[in-house]
Amino acid sequence: MADYFTILSRALERGDSGNAAWRHKIYDRTRQLLLTQLRARKPQLSDANIKKEMAELDAAIASIEDQFAQSEQGSGLRADSFGLESEDETSDQSDELVARSVWAGSSKTPIVLAIVFAAIAAGAYAIWATRSQHRAPTESKNETTMASAARAHNRPRTTTLTDGDLAPGIDGGSSEADVGYVLRRQPVFYRTTLPVGAIIIDQTQHFLYLTQPNSVALRYGIGIGKQCANLSGLRKISAKAKWPQWQPDPDMIKRKLARPGMLAGGPGNPLGARELALDDGSSKIHGTNAPKTIGTSSLQFGCIRLVNDDISDLYDRVEIGTRVVFGK
Image (cartoon, rainbow, N blue to C red):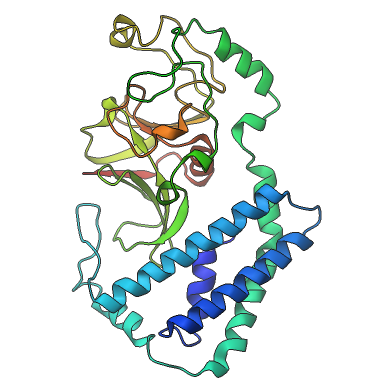
């Protein structure tokens, strides 16, 4: 996936960034350039992948516009226990954003478009390669075997539990299509004193951030299980696993939310496609069999959950030892 936020942000610095009409002209041209590049890609991308890539560009544009709105309103950014810098500590960066809002002359438009075109053209192959390597987890070669194992589990008769979760063995899908726009994976403007590659979990807003260079973070929507509702402080990733097994705790069995027995990894498993175990020995970041529960709390299963597409993306980006900061 190309980093559209960085491409556009750097390009806009070279032109009339303070003029909203000019910015939107650049956005429209960028959409046309990207669509042309995607359709010309060989082997040809599917319509679904093209649509998803265009949506990611639109998400980056929305984040950039949010950044300009914050600068124009002079509201600053929140400083909190996640290590965000205070407004005073980042005044130089804020002043720079305001300075960009001065009219620079429309003659720079061709230069800006040239920068955008070069960046998108260079990333076109990467877009195709990423889509090829990061297919939805349920498209793996072992899909039939794993799905059969999940269905064979002696699950409850009902498929939907009282909190909206799906019963073990029921596969609700792996895509972010069932998640609201705000909770979908997207790059956002984000200031922090934490190093690049750190994970920050905002339980109140239901977001997980993976810090990136240049005051950017990848933001993922999360659901929060009862096990992790009160977590705070610093953790580290201690282990990684693909398609982990799941076993209900005694309380769930007693309440007839699940039946005894280990559920093999695969579609329908409450832990989803990937698991990132934390060093406290019990907490974890994982996938889910119920995408529609993203953005909710006090869920029956697990700890910090993402849709399967998102946990697979995060899994490939982080290593054992990655810092994880929990905040309220």
